[in-house]
Structures are given as structure tokens and as C-alpha cells.
Image (cartoon, rainbow, N blue to C red):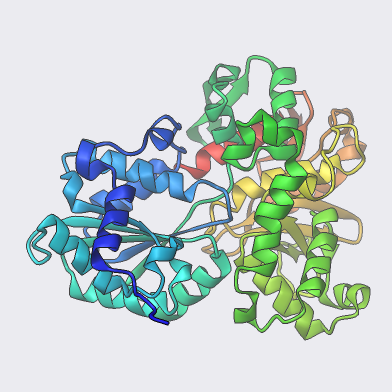
Length: 474
């Protein structure tokens, strides 16, 4: 039997099909009518404005809009005067590209479009690059060989991408993390910006922007929706998916990450065991854990549990937050830590949507707030716990590792009514001479003055919005 290989003509036909702008100067209408994510500008600076000769690796959890973001980048390049012929897009999960070397693919593109690769600036986008074996070696070679080409790659196998980018792309790759939808973006995409008012405020003698709301109950209603299904653009804006988030999140996101996104790279063989651990963590998001306890609960060895946790963190599913004491000191041996989902919608999708009166909802509020902070990886957040108290969020200065601010997260209005409910905050702020700390509420906004300093009450939904919005400014 004669086995025929894919011809150049067939590959060129597919490239023309995928690169519609070669013929009409426009990206496909499906993507053109979608609103860009607010992280668009941060990526565009790397794609278009950066002078550094590196490939950009767009990574993040599944279904956060990486492919849509690429199409929006292409649209912006064309609008900024780049010739449509100088832009190539290829999704490497397309069967016709199987077995094709990246260099052969782009040389065929150069030949087809008459591009002088040595003298013409061009932009080359490889989507789902993890489908190419040893992609990092091929991409690094292209960066070194084609000085006038700008390479942008993305993929859904986040753990694999991050591992290989770190190992092989030093000095040649720039990682760009696209996070789940922030609450700020959720409000923006749902055209609810009129709920927010921007004001000026003074914080530590500096004038800063502060946000208020015209209707706290309406904002809270949206916050509950965001926690249940708002971390993904497609889920947030599609009422049909909202009716059955379990099927969408579990089958299309969780199962693929835990079973298909190359956990074998981390030496993980027992996928069921990994899945059980993730379910335990997801149900208890925001709880304090230690490896010994997780090992006893699952029956797996401590080293195996550490490997699983590392994979889940690299896959952008969870984040660890480490403990300090009331003196603001980190422990020499980090035995205890909290684990948060990177997106509260994961828990609701895996189990069931949460009611804001549920006992566990406070943990989901805390998870939602931390998920906004996780978009700022250089912010060294911890939680403080000692014999007589605990504070949910403490920031340590990178200069001297001393506490610079503290936040206690509550989904209730009763904690700001008397001093006895504020003992941990007052003790901590007095010890570290913090002039103002934050306590979240459900509805209340006000500042309370004490001998130790000021405690600002802010609705949790508004604080979540604020952190998500400011993450775009760093």
C-alpha cells in the first residue's frame, strides 16, 4: 500500500485558510466581534513595542482566552500599519502540520508570500505549540536565526510550557502569564462599569486612586456570580454554559489538565491519585495544609504529594501561601501553608454553585481575593498565624522583609462592630506600627480609629475589584 505524505500545496492551502487577513486584511469575524481582555495592552507591548529579541511565550490555564488574545494582537498589528502578508498564524494542533518542522513551515510561508526573511519585519504566531515535540529547541533556533522575525507562541499545556521554557529558553524566551478573568475584567466585559466610582484617597501620605460603588448590593450579586463561574471569559458571557458549568469546567478544563497536559513530565504515573488530591484541595480551598497531613489523608508518600502539588501549581490550578508568625518572621521550616485555587470558579464547577449564605462561602471570597493578587507574582504575600490570632493577608517588604500592610478577609458586617472582634488586627498593627490596615465586610464602608491606628472597612467585592484593577498597573 502506498502511503502518501502531505504536499506543500496542501499545507499552503491550510495556511491561507487560517490566515484570512492575507486576502482581506481582516481577522475572522468571530474573533473581531469579541471584546479584548484588559491584559491586551500588556501583551502588545511585548509583541509590537519591545526591542528585545526574544520569543514571547503566552501561557496560562485553559480557556482564559489565549487564542482570542492572539487574534486580537494580529488585528492590532494590521491597524498599526503592519502588512497583513507579514503576519503568520499556525495552530500546531491542526493535523496537517503534524511532523512539520517549524523552520520548514515558516520557510514555506516566506516562499509563498515572497517575504525576505533577512530584511523584512514579520510576526509569527504558533498556537498550541506543545503539540510539537522538542518545541523549545526548535523555537530557540528560530529566534537565533531570524533576527527580523518576532515569534509568539502559546499553548494550553501550561505545566509543560513553563517547565520547558524555564529549562531551555533562558535568554531567548519571555513568559507572559494570562490569568483567569479578574473581577475587574468581569465587570468590564459585562458592561457594568457604571457600578464603579473612582475617587482620590491618601494612603501612607501618598495620593492614590480609590474605588467606590453606586450600588453595593448589585456589585455583591455580580461578585457571587463571578465566584461561581466568572473566571473564564466564555463561561461569564454564555448563559448556556452558566446553566451547566460542571460539564464545561470538569470535562474541558480539569480533565485535560490532569490527564492530558503531560503530567508524566513530573514523573506522575497515578493520575487517579493526582485527581483525588486536587479534589481534596479544591473542596478545602483557603485551608491550612501540611504535607504530612495530605500524605496521611491520601495514603501517598510525602515526596509523591510534593510532586503532585508542584505540578498543580505549575499548571496554574493552585497557589501556596506561606505562614509567618506575629513578629512577621517566616519559619525556617515551612511545615504549614495555605493552598488556594487560582480561580474560585473551579470549585463551583467541580462540585456545585455556592450560595453566598453557605458556611464555605467565606473561603471562596478569600480565594477570589487571593486570585487577584496571584497576578502580581513579585508581591510576597503571606498569612500570619500565632497562638491567639490570625491575619489572612500580610505583605512583607522585599527590602527588609517587614510587614507593610495587612488585610483580614470577612464576608460579614458584624466584625467591625466592636474592638473584641478586631483583637488580632489591632495587636499586629500595633506591634508593626502599621498606620492603617484593611478589614473586608459585606456591605459596610468606613474608617475606624483606634489607639493603634486606623482600620478601614471595605466591602469584599469592592476590594476584589480594586486588587484586580491595580494588577494591570504593575
